[in-house]
Length: 318
Image (cartoon, rainbow, N blue to C red):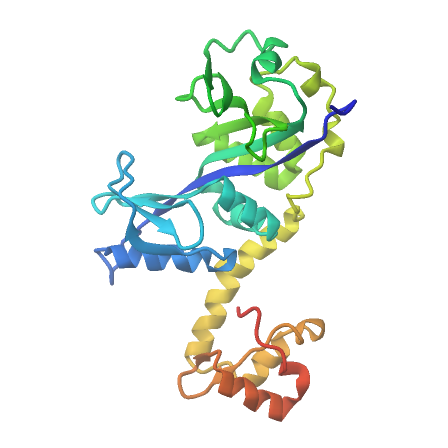
């Protein structure tokens, strides 16, 4: 055991609400419409929903479509005008490692319904010993679960807007050397936690989410939160999050509309790419269909006409 346990933290669960808005041209949404809507909003995150029902249900939802490469997915009910998109711990880990978690959060911050933050300590301390170190007297609900796979303690009601779980796995689980503290925020508390995460950073978010339980164990109180190891949580500046959201929600749809009408030509897309990014991004334009395409034949034509700047295959298309 180290003199001062290593501490790291990252988002570990995210859920938000989606709405199926009626319009003059669309009054009824099919299941395929819902999948298309979700996949369009998540395309920049590298996630997409399949049309295979897993059979999992949750009131008021009757269907669950899983991510193609992930554990979370979309909950919905054809009779209800809204649904819930949910990212599990593994999904959140992929988003943070790819540097896309805050980008997504900036787009859906007002619709967040749950946000979990996981704080890991490399220590031999048991969850019950951590809890025995003390916590706020305002916490009236607590429980403990011990099984062959590990030990878990809960502080706060799991039906409330904020609670926490403290657990560790038994060997031979790969995380058996760590004590995990998971801070859970739901409903309005989740929306506020998400805004704090974007505006003030991960450390401030942890402090807010833990201020109701007020842990008294030295493992928590002596932690230097300002030097927290959050290497798995690449941060975007507040202005960058807002700018990215503006680009995705307003600029990109406007460009696509102009492109579909034939207003934007090939030269526009070539000049749109910064000089230092051209070796990584290839924009291809098909005049007949009036849209961006990714055909290998067109890429070869661009190489012949404009040189080796298009020699690499596209890695990003707006």
